[in-house]
Length: 84
Image 1 (cartoon, rainbow, N blue to C red):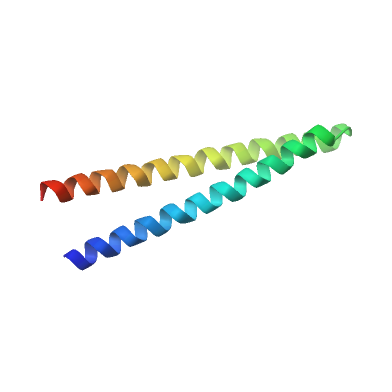
Image 2: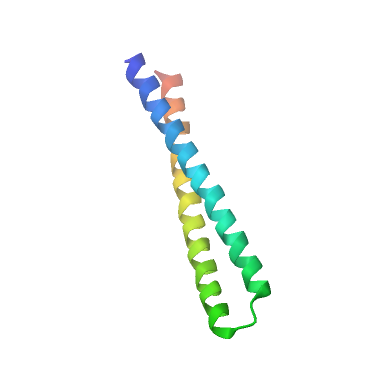
C-alpha cells in the first residue's frame, strides 16, 4: 500500500510540474504576443495577434484549472492519509 501511495504521489507531482512548465511556456507566448500587439500597426496582423492572445488566455485558464484540480486532489488525498 505504501508503494502505491508514493507512486501515486510521484505521478501527481510529475503532472503538477508538467502543468507548471506548460504555464510558463504559455506565459512566454502571451508576453510575445503582447509585445507584438504593441509593435503592430497593420490591422490584419493586429487581429491575428489578438486571436493569439485570446487563445493564450484560454489555455492559461485551462492550465490553472487543471493545476487547482490536481492540488485539490493532493490535499484530499493527504487528508485521507491523516485519517487512515
